[in-house]
Length: 425
Ligand code: S3P
Image (tube, rainbow, N blue to C red; front, side, top):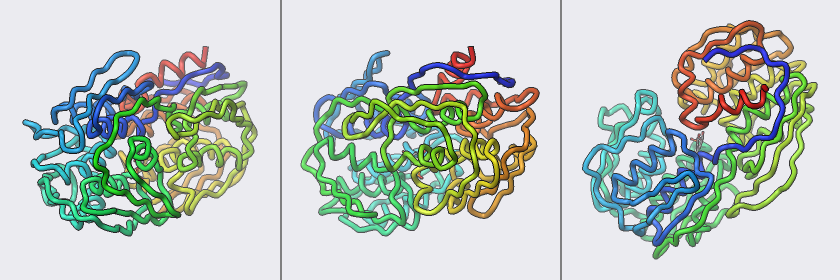
C-alpha cells in the first residue's frame, strides 16, 4: 500500500464493531441458553477466528450482512473439536477461550500464527492451573500451541501482577465453572467488557475498586447485542482529523466505555478540538458520536493507571505526539512489548526513519514533536495497529510511504483504506 500527503479529510463515517465486544458476544452466546443476535459485529480476521473455534465445538453460528446469530447450547453444551483450534493472530481468542475450555469435560489443543505462537501465555496458565486446570505449552516455551485438558475448576482469588483484561477475563470465565465465587484483583482496572456483558447474560458479577468477582451461574441467557463502534479503530481517524490540515471528521456510535476512553482524554489534554454528542447506552456500554477538527496541539505525559484505558491506542498517540509542540512522555507501558509485535521498538525505529525525534525507553517512549516527517518503506510484522498508524503518519509526510504488509489491517479493520480514501475525496 502506497500513501501520499493529503490536503484534508472530511466527512461522517461509521466505525466497525468493537473487537473486544464482538469476541465476547460469540463466546458468551455459545455457552448461553437460547439465541444471541449480534448487530455491527466486527467481520475482522480475529473475530472470524473466534466464530470458527466455536463452530468446531458444535455451535451453530449464522452470519448474514445484517447480523450474526449464535444458537447457544448452554454452559455444558460445547463438544470436543475434531481438530486443533486455529486462533489465527488473536490473543483475545486464545486467552479468553482458554478460560472457558479449562472447565469443559474434553481436551483441546489450540494454536495460532507465528506472531500469536510467540506471545506470552504463562500469564493465563499460572492462574488457570492454580484453579485446577491442566494447560501446558506444547513446545514447553510458555507460548501456544497450548494443550488444555478439561478439569474440575476450584473457586479462587487471583492477584494479577498485570493490568490485562485478557488475563482477568480468562480467570473469570473459568470461574463460571467453579465451585464457588472467583475473583481477580488487578494493579489498575483494565477494560471491563467481560464483566458488563456477563451481567447482561444474567450472571452475577460484582466490581469493587480493582476487584471483579463472578458467581457461577446455573445458566446464561441469550441476548440481543448491538456492538458499539470500536474506539481503537476510531482512534486512527481521531488522530488523522486532528493532524491533517483542513479536516473535520465525525465518527458515529463509537464506544466510550470509561475503561477504554483514554485516547479522548489525551487529545483533550493536548489541546485538541474534539467533541462528543448523542451520548447513548448500548447493552450497558456507553456510545457517542465523536467530531474532531484540525488542531494546534501540545505535548503531554501519559502513564500510571491511565495506560490500560488506551493501551491499543499508544502507537497512534505516538504519531499525534510527532505533530504536537514540545515533549510527550509515554511511561509504564511495557505491555506494548508483548502485543502483536514489540510496539515500542517498531514505532520508535520507524518514526525515527521518517525523521521524528523519538527515543525508546524501557517502558514507553519520549517524543519531541514538530519535526517534519518524510515517507519510508516499512514492514509492520503483520501488526494491524502498526500498519494503520503508519498509514496516518504517511498521509501527513512528504513523499511516499509504502506499507509492505498492509493487508494485515484485515485483523481489526478490513475497510480501513476504503474509509480513508472516502474521507480524502
Ligand atoms: C483486549 C485486551 C487488551 C488489548 C487487546 C484486546 C481484550 O489486551 O490489548 O487488543 O479484548 O480483552 P490486554 O488485556 O492483554 O492488555
